[in-house]
Image (tube, rainbow, N blue to C red):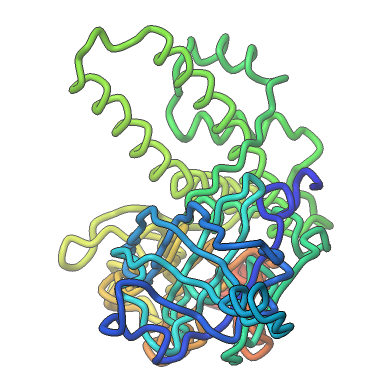
Length: 418
């Protein structure tokens, strides 16, 4: 087990595409997998049936996560013959208890079976054409999965297995909490923020200030800056959140269940919002430092409030201003199906730019984005999670910055000619 790698949370992992016979829920009250002898690498060769506590998860791109606890049973179907008649043949089988999650498995779904470091089993399934499937395959180091037999990874300490900003978000989406904190800043944060969370903008500014050497310079690309600031803010956020939550738990809730639920909900809501605000505040700071003109969150057609319009509100509302010189940038920490929301924003702008931290997104969805005029923008480091044919189309943050600055320079040049 190596800290900071997948091996810290998983011993071994297997993946395959499900066949119709394995998803037929009418056969019995359990799913049975045959031809699983290779899984001996994960589960060994036990004497008798071994029953593992298991967590079953089904992921989809519409934010619907189905999860339920159950059991997974591993055994040798020929063990009795071996004991009674000295038959040397082994035939290992795996039974998976039917749960709400496994009931929605279909032929062609991607299935991950991972043995946790605590001996429990995590199974994850998703439609093979979904972004959710591409993300769990990328997380565990399986690419181009088309096989019907299990593929197994034993060694989870390669460079790919190092837990990154992207992999942390995928792990947390399947219930694996990554404990990474920076306690050396806790006392300072408690003093400055008076024992509570400040506004999101102030917190983002504080995170940048803790990295005095990470500043916009001509030779520093914007992708590196944005990722460094986001990573630092995430660690600081978790550090402060953990401390405040522990303090609140120590105080207790005086038997008031409503107070407990209110506290829990406030934590969940804050977690949901903070990353979107963090992206917004750090990218806005970059615009200011690079001299980019923009307007944010003003009301347009149909009451929509786009995240950023370039070069500004006045130009967008001036119908004589050339549409070719207008740009929109939307922000989504995670796209899922919500990327389509940007299509209804800024009617005057045909091509929509969308900055996200989600990686990877399925080819099916990126093809839809291309067809509908949406251009994805991602920090450069996240591009490697995408397929080669997708990477050529993606823009980096620096690419987008140059795009709007070039339009701004051309507009200035045209004004000078007038």
